[in-house]
Amino acid sequence: MQTFSGVGVAPGRVLGPVRQMPKPVREPAAQLPGAVNIPADVTVESQGQRIKDAAKAVQAELRARAATASGEGKEVLEATALMAADPMLVKSAIKLLSPDAPGGARTAERAIWEAGATVADSLKALGGYMAERVADVLDVRARIVSELRGLPAPGIPASDVPFILAAEDLAPADTATLDPAKVIALITSSGGPQSHTAILARALGLPAIVAAPGVDEIGDGTEIYVDGAAGTITVDPGEELRLAAKVWATQACTVAAFSGSNVMADGFRVPLLANVGTGADAVKAADAGAEGVGLLRTEFCFLDRDDEPTVEEQIAAYGAVFAAFPGKKVVVRTLDAGADKPLPFLTNADEPNPALGVRGYRTDLTSPGVLERQLEAIAAAEAANQAEVWVMAPMISTAEEAAHFASLCAAAGLKVPGVMVEVPSAALTAATVLREVSFASLGTNDLTQYAMAADRQLGPLATLNDPWQPAVLQLVKLTADGAAAASAGGTARPVGVCGEAAADPALAVVLVGLGVATLSMSARALAAVSAVLATVTVAQAQKLATAALAAPSASVARQAVRAQLPILDELGL
Image (cartoon, rainbow, N blue to C red; front, side):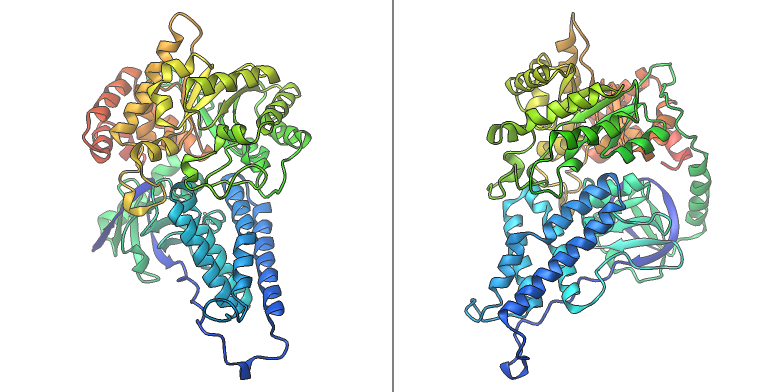
């Protein structure tokens, strides 16, 4: 038996044949054919039009797929569709068609290939979130070249039987449209624990392992065993592992549906909320028993647009989510634009380091009015529904910023202002920050990335970019302790977690032990997290949190906690 090791990002033990993602689109020839072979109607203008038409066709196809998707999948597809018609990409390619271009004229296929490489290199050099867009650009490039060649777009392989999908990495447009009835697990040789692959695997409930070198070379049809919790892939497994897969399939079916009220073993309540992006997502989350919404991503209302949506459009979009949770809490994150979510009317694509630039709350500095109009729309949608609406700003770094956001909320008539704790400075000064607002929510994806200075998409940095890192857990504790200090003698200021860490049942126990009051996750994770929390008391959670904080590494922290939670093995988690 051959074994590969990577970073487990979604639990599950499955057995099945491998299907490899098709290899990247073949690079077009570097040279333009000799003039004797060029038809009279092949001109710079005609080839330029071919590029424009192909880019529009790719954009249309991605938009059509977005129309049938929801939540994170919809957002990813819409963002990729925007990239397909990026003027910088198309114009750069058309310039390379000219005989006056450096190196001479190119074919349309070669021109878009080189232009895509140039754009990707520029984004990679910027680092941080802009570097995360490199995969999107190269995906779009491959799709346009395929369109120019009259070939099917790259994508998930077809199969008559369920299979385990293996790849170097998956493009966002692919991960967004996986069919979990056919794809039963995901394994990649690259990527990280907060990559698109990881996030969407969790949302789909698929066992997944990333950053496992060599798995993209496993032969098609080879039978393998995947343990998403352990992060191991075994080729041609023996009877013991085959039995483990059968047992897990049975156990997975025995996890009771979430009751809609999460109670720990000692009767302590920790509400389990859902992360949503649209009204359709909210309906599904409510059907799954979510006790409210811990993160409403409002970007879905702004993506794929060249101008700001009207207040009326925003009211309708937010209202669709509020309507699904009458009488329950819905936490709205104001527009998190910038970095990996650039918007033409709001953000500057030329920033030297967008991850540390004008994003989230900071866009109010350069584009005043957009945030105030969004708050106006949120308040109007709240007035027309029965949800209990809380509002938080992303990328808050100081108490001064928190106070300003609270004043904007008050002016709009919104009564419960809060902040996202994603920047380490906000965690370190939580006591003063939280005196200005009513609550905080930890965005563990960004908090981990910023605390560890590790791009969350990079496979080589996957072990650093892990929310189990003791340094990250210390920041969580500092935030909870700061909230307690800010609440002393007055109104409680609860701290929640809405990052991917909340969907890890073992880490959920630690977070509660650190003082986190609510957990928000994909609807699919609710039942498993609730099942595990029901087996521990608050005192036990605090003991496990202390052990995790004292660990010398993320892996030791994870192992120490999991060893004390036998329910995880019982449920195959």
